[in-house]
Length: 381
Ligand code: NAD
Ligand code: TDX
Image (tube, rainbow, N blue to C red; front, side, top):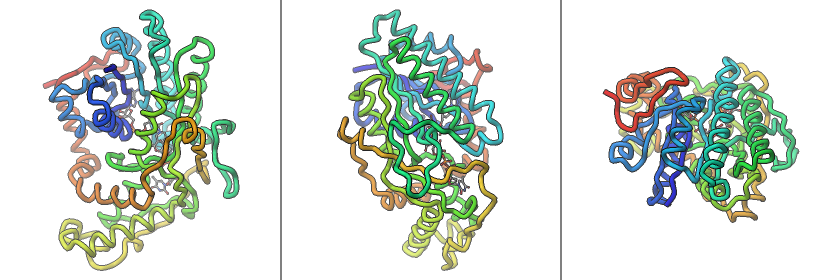
């Protein structure tokens, strides 16, 4: 049994990791710290918080006092650091908060972990896993080799630059102070609980609502899609079996252009409507409700500034060192994901309508600004 801190555990990957960790290692004690930004969602964690099987702390990773108290109280032996601002488009509109959370927040966590583990003589037993992105390596052309752990850093968006900076600080803490940390750089995740601002959920929801499917540029940009369950399995392998100070790339071995992804989503929705007549009455604005293809909604829009052309990740180090294999073929994972959003209409409608924000403010209202937030292991109110 060990006590594990998961930062950003109310985000998309965080929620999936909490459930995966609970299923694989029910004896461990999980503490989630999350600032409950717009990207957070506690609905899937609510039952675990209510029954006391995880501890939830409404807090900001820039708050060193809070982090020190948590390290003192829980003596974490494992930390998985996911908390971040994660959306590239938002980083273009407002880069400041990305530097604040991704760079300064990461520094605050590293310093706190080092001090706490030194003081408790835990440096030889504890481990911190910093979860980063393949975007730090920049953009590939069609014939370039996939990113390896030795690829040079060439971040192109403020988001990618902030994650690259955080990776460098982690490395410096390993090299200079001996912090037992590891880094993973993964490709685009998809699956349940992803915020509707990201490509796959956005396209599913727009199609169901009969709205335009906005493809940036000509849709030829390529991403390497990784099902979140495969990502979580890899994270658990790396934090236990990886070598401290090392970086491991995690990818899905599923390169697809954005246009291919959107066309496939349309095909899956068209087929689902053809097979289930109730969907037409639930989503009457969807073209498939009247026998037309969702592809009729595809709309090419202005490109994202600095839009990376292609990401592809070489996972041979992870495979050889830790025996990791990707188990979810993209077409299967995407079909499951479309069906998850079809079944979880209330979940995404609450997010897109703003009703969820009101719920979270009522039930988990933050009681202070950065530097003052307090833990709420139980509901406020
Ligand atoms: P997300 O945006 O869904 O979740 C991020 C979580 O961090 C949210 O719950 C948010 O409330 C929390 N958070 C933000 N600022 C915080 C702060 N200052 N203090 C405490 N909590 C804060 O992101 P995600 O998609 O789950 O990504 C998780 C991590 O994985 C991020 O570090 C991201 O860079 C990395 N990553 C994600 C992907 C992907 O495809 N989603 C790919 C590669 C790497
Ligand atoms: O409306 C859209 N139309 C569109 O064409 C959106 C939201 C996106 N796109 C394109 C841009 C990208 O080429 O789809 C691709 C995927 O876009 P996002 O879902 O915004 O992801 P991306 O920018 O690739 O970054 C994601 O993967 C790496 C995550 O958001 C990052 O957190 C992660 O590090």
